Amino acid sequence: MKSSIGVAVIVFLVALGILLSDIAEDRSMSVKVTESVAAYDDWECGNQYQLDCKVIFETVINQSYSVQRIRYGKDFMAIKVTQAGISGWIYAGKGIQVSAEPNT
Picture 1 (cartoon, rainbow, N blue to C red):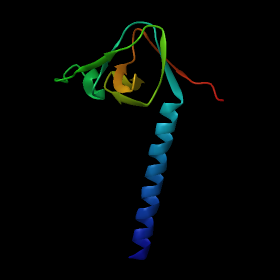
Picture 2: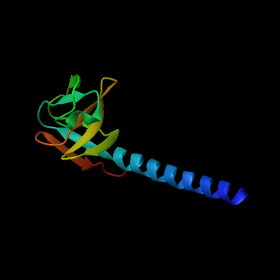
Picture 3: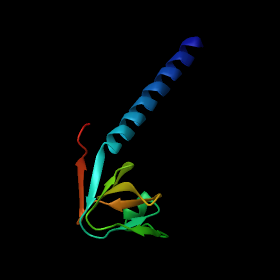
Picture 4: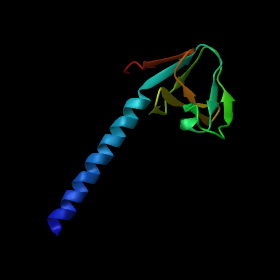
């Protein structure tokens, strides 16, 4: 019984470490927007069959944004950015340049 609890704790800690590593990797990226792009309320709005998506804000042209999270769907990459304290999801494609931020 005690060994199964220990195994469960170890599995939980490994999964948590993987999640935190993924978040840290996402946050090491930045996005430069070269065209005005709509930011949506949900990352799944990149799916052409997703209904009820709302535009939260329009990005500013030639602005760089820090990445909060990156999600992948079939045929799209959603990038969570923040503008004026509001978070929204933009989609990689024309007008979006994703790059790693330099280490400081």
